[in-house]
Image (cartoon, rainbow, N blue to C red):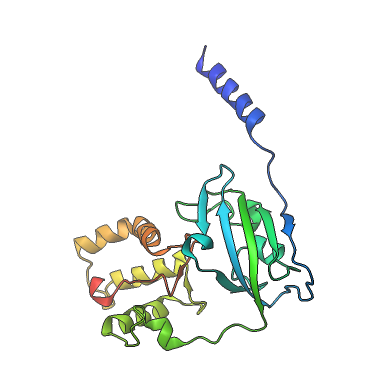
Length: 237
């Protein structure tokens, strides 16, 4: 059999066994508690438990595994569009299944090495609580990474670096923000010639950014939160 025939057979097999492409958000209500009078709406603070899987059944994240629900504000872009749209009119205690197309998830780019580009996402979600306003940020507790009620020089240094990198002030670092910060740190400010080591680092800059995200982006959502961030410190640059 020629290579062309083999490829044709494989293409036909793929067309036969691949599931239909998901292009729209699908929401299935699994269970609703009795006596529900308050439902989620845009602007509410929601606390959720969830498990996320890919089409092949691979679990990429779960708040149940961490025994820590996730809190965010609905409808303001803090989460993927599939969540902003699929978690409206939900009761506390309600459980749903969401099937989210790539266009409402992580798009063609994906998220790190966990979620490939163009992936359909499957979520089992449970609403734990509905709040009216975002919680007030306790800056001390945010900086106090080891929770010993004391701030070390290292913790303060890490916080300063994080805020310097976080240009849009959304408490999350995107790949672009990390990339821009590293480039500024590498290039001499006085215009002097770069060392060979720095030149090599610039050449492998994209790889360096990806390595940082693999290490720092614990929940693999494509951003590094203040809680996840562990550096770099000034003496490492």
